[in-house]
Image 1 (cartoon, rainbow, N blue to C red):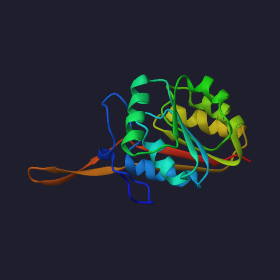
Image 2 (cartoon, rainbow, N blue to C red):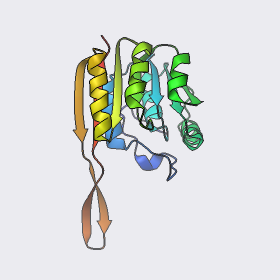
Image 3 (cartoon, one colour):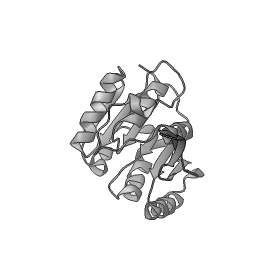
Image 4 (cartoon, helix red, strand yellow):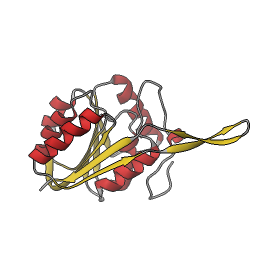
Length: 195
C-alpha cells in the first residue's frame, strides 16, 4: 500500500470519518522524525484517532510493535480499518481510558500522545514510568493551556533534549480562478528524551 521508506502517507490514502481526528500528513512527518524510531521498537500511540501515527510508526519499526489506544469506539474501528488497509500485523489496538490502560503495558521505546480529552499532562506523568531510559516522547498539542501544563510536567520529570516545534501548514486548493493556499490550525510538537 505504501511502498516507500519515508513517512508522509497522503491523508486521502487513509480511511476517514468526519468525527474522528487525523494527524495531518505534514505534522505526522515531523512527529515521526522527532521520535527517532528504530526497527524492533515498542511504541505507544495514545489517542490514536484514525491510526495514522500508528500506521506510519509500524512501517518504520518493522519487526517492532505499536500499541494504539483510544477511548472512542469510532476511532478504534477506524484504526483497525487502516491497519487492515495497509496490511500491517505489528499494531495492537486497545479501546479504553489511557490512564488505566498504560499501567497494564510493557515498557516502550517511544510514546506518541495525541488527542487525550484534556488529560495530557497526567498521561505524560504515567508514561514517564513506562518509557525506557533514553526513550522518546512526542506530544502533538493544539491548545495553549495544554502546552503550558505539558512543559511544566516535562520539566518536573527531568526529561532532557526538550524540543518545541510549532508548525502552521497551508495546503493548495484549486478554485475557478486559480490556486489558493488554505491555512490549517497551528500544531505544537513537543519532543523529549527520558534521562
